[in-house]
Structures are given as C-alpha cells and as structure tokens.
Image (cartoon, rainbow, N blue to C red; front, side, top):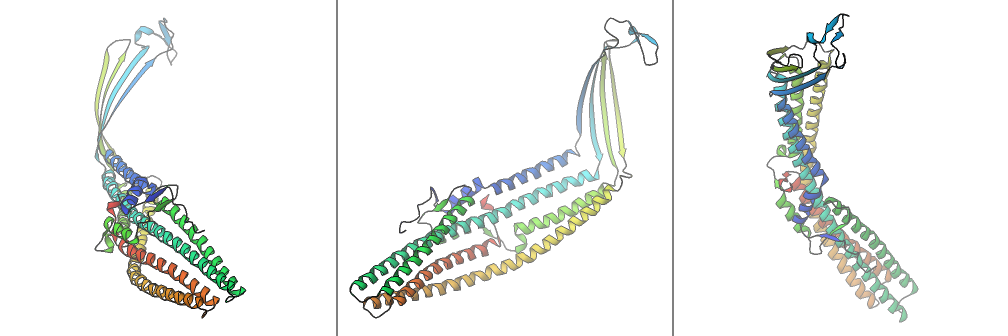
Length: 425
C-alpha cells in the first residue's frame, strides 16, 4: 500500500487548460448557447409578423367527364350542353398575393418582448459561466487536496511501519512487551484504513474533475499544481462587480419580471382591432378559348375581435399570476444573495483563522511525536504514548491540508459570489 494510486491517463496542467476544455466540452454551456440561438430565432419570427408577405399559387386541372371525344355532356341541372359551348378540359390558374400588415399593436409589442428574451438568455449564459467556473475551480482544488491527503496517508503508513519495526527490535532486546507489539500493529492497521479511505477520495475527485472538464473518465492534476495557482487562475478569468444587483442571475430575474409584464400587456393588446392590406394578381388559361384571363384586386381588411369565449381573459389572469411569481422569485433571490454574500465574506476570515490554528496544532503534534519517539527509543515512554502521538500527527496533517483547501474555497466563493466570468465563454 506504500505504492501511490496510478495516475490517470489525462492530467490538467493549469487553470487555463482546464477552462479551455470546459468551454469546449461542457454540455451545459452548449445548451445555454442554444437557448440564445432559439431566442434570436423567436425574435426573427416576431419580426416576420409585421413584415409584408408574398405568396404564389398555381393550379392545373383536367376534366375527366365528359370523356375525350364527346361533344356534349349533361350539366348539374340535367340539361345537355355542347362541349364547344365553353366547357374546358384543361385549366391553368396562377395567382400572386401580397399581404401588408398596417396596424397590429400586439405584433409590434411582441418584437420588443422577443428582443428582451434574447437579453434574458444571454444573462442566463453569463450566470451559468459564473457557476461553472466556480464548480471547476472547486473540482481542481479538491483534486489537489486529495492528492496531498493521499500522499500524507502513505507517509503516515511508512512512519507506522517504522514504529512497528522499532517496537519489534525493542522486544528482541527485552525492553518491549507483547502488548507494545499489538499496539504498534494496531497503529499500522489504522494507518492502512485511513489510506484506503483517502485513496478512494482521490479517485472520486479525479472522476469529478473529469466530469467538470467534459470527460467520462478520471482526470487528475500534475504534481506541480498548487492551490494558489488555481486561485490566481480563477481570479484572472472572473471579474468583480461593484454591486450585487449587477450579478447575472439577479439581472436575469429582473428581465423575467419585465418579460412577464410585457406578455401580460400583449394579452391586453389582443383586444384591439388589426388592419391589413392585400393585393392579388391572378391569371387563368383554358383550352377552350386559348386566351388568358387576368384579374387584379386590392383589399383592405379590418379585423375586430368581439368574443372568443373568454380565452383572452383567462390568458390575462394567467399572465398576471406569472408576473407575480416572477416578482416573488426576484425578491427571494435578492434576499438569499445578500445573505450569501455576507456569509462568503465572513467565511474567509473564519477559514484564515482555522488554518492558523491547524498549523499550530500540526506543529505541536509533530513536536509531541518527535519527543515521544525519542523517549521511547531510550525507554522513557510507553507504546500507548507512541501510538497516540502518531495518530494525532496523522490527523493534524490531514486537518491542515483540508483547512488550506477550505481557505481557497472561501476566497473563491467570496470572489465568485459578486463577480462575472465572461472570460469563460
């Protein structure tokens, strides 16, 4: 078990490399980009409703009855009519229709709503970039810490084996008992158990990092990667904001409130009449006369909505409820974001103080273990003290590594709680 966990096939060398992989392979960012494309398509569709439309129609018909060669046929009234009297066997009709919307308040208003929906989609992508960058930084930092904790576990196991060898040597000289041997072996067993746990945590951290950068396989970090480099990389990718109200998720929530209000107003505009103009140019050719018949007309159409069974009133009440829900969501987000920002800033000081205490505890545990081992070698200590000091030192080393991770995470959280990560596009 002193052999380290085999390294994964792929390893991250820097924050820039990890961010580049994440931008290229993240399905969440791809979906956010597709949402923007859909919003842009909806804007084009809304614009089409107020632009002129031009449609061409062609029709070709062939009369089967009367049969070919028949000079007469019986019409619907029962009268016998000569085929030469104007009955055509083949007819061609073609028409060209131009429609021009003149007054449509609802369609005009829908164009502005569609553009604001585009803005909301872009804000949603910006918020996803912020949270994705935070998740990536956390995954890299956890992987770095897991590598260190796993290595500390091996160092602890090596020290436990050395203490066991020392105890066995003392037993051969008659200065140690069988109980001392059992205690030393128990210490080795505890070190092995901790190492199994830390190795599995390392493998899971590699799996999490692989998912964060878009791979269905473990991804590790190079031994030269430090927590400070990860923090500095995230600081360069994300930029602080002057006010909490400018954070992308809050801006997106405000945009949703405005969109809900505009959609409610669109329902109201559906009660107004619409005015449009159209013109149709038609050409008809038959095989009777051989000459074409052309027609051209111009129309003005006024459409006045009178009664639709109450559908618009139902849509108006639904839109009002959606607007109220959006306002409630915005208020709740403001509250949680304000509290989260205060906690994130406070957590930095807490993590810094915890790290200082952990360093002191590690230094004291190291000195206790050194003195205990020196005393045990000269016969001034017991095996129980030796094992207890070793366990305390191993735990102090792990606690220090975790507190270092906690400080980096607290700093990143404090930054990203009030930041935008546009560089992660």
